[in-house]
Length: 172
Image 1 (tube, rainbow, N blue to C red):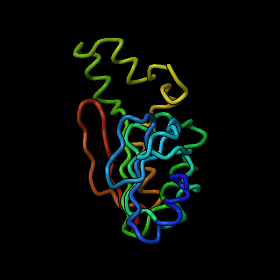
Image 2 (tube, rainbow, N blue to C red):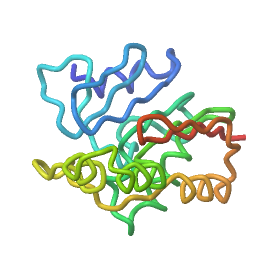
Image 3 (cartoon, one colour):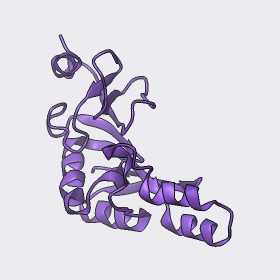
Image 4 (cartoon, rainbow, N blue to C red):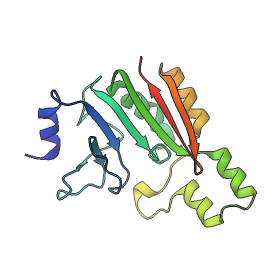
């Protein structure tokens, strides 16, 4: 029985925590780890579309959804649809953590000369080696805060560290 079928069978009996990955390097224990690059031999990572979670979850089933360093890889014309879909998967009182490059800190560090041009370019554009390593749009923290509030989420926590931000929001 493959990973996704097992999870659909078991989901009534477990708390659903989802970790969305653009690579296969950061699986978390206790989460359903989903990556578009997972291979059949990876038992702890399910292969699947991370923009639409319909193949894993029904509406209101996730207690937590982590999407760290994913948001900047989503095309601008899809961002509203993707965020609405992710939010619909959250249970009431479920939380979502989204993170990306913090543009103000990045530009400030670059202007001060504290980061190299290659590092700056990697954070802004990605490295371009695969489709999921080329960034589509830098949304920024303020954009996502506004989106979350407009979509009815309660902002719980905002962190900035190492030129990256994360926003924790809760569905009422």
